[in-house]
Image (cartoon, rainbow, N blue to C red; front, side, top):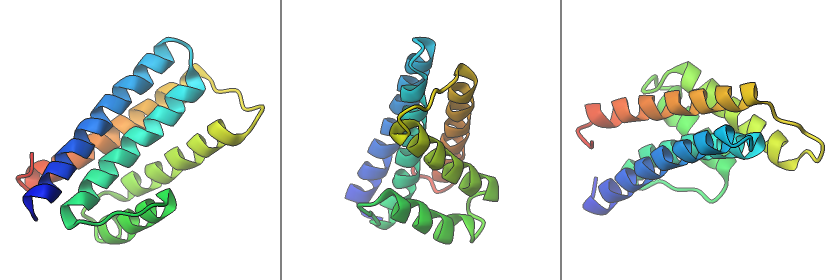
Length: 133
């Protein structure tokens, strides 16, 4: 891993942590759809932090998620639950963002924030074991 890859990894992890805090602020201010969006992006940035170690990046979200699942979840570096919840976060974000009449609830927003926080925690554990953070 190069210094640039390490720096990008740490930057993306910080971005994930800030974004989950943004999700909490949105939820607390009754912007539930925005909270769902921010929760997904928090988890997405955390996953991209892992990929940064390898110098891997993709333009499309589905490619990031697919690569992470294939190279990290399927090989048991990350739990199967992490892969499943990431996919659910992505689907919920898409519904919330693109379905015109979707009404998000505080419970959904809270659940998505908790899921994102768990993914971030798993990423931090992995990066700590690798000596990156």
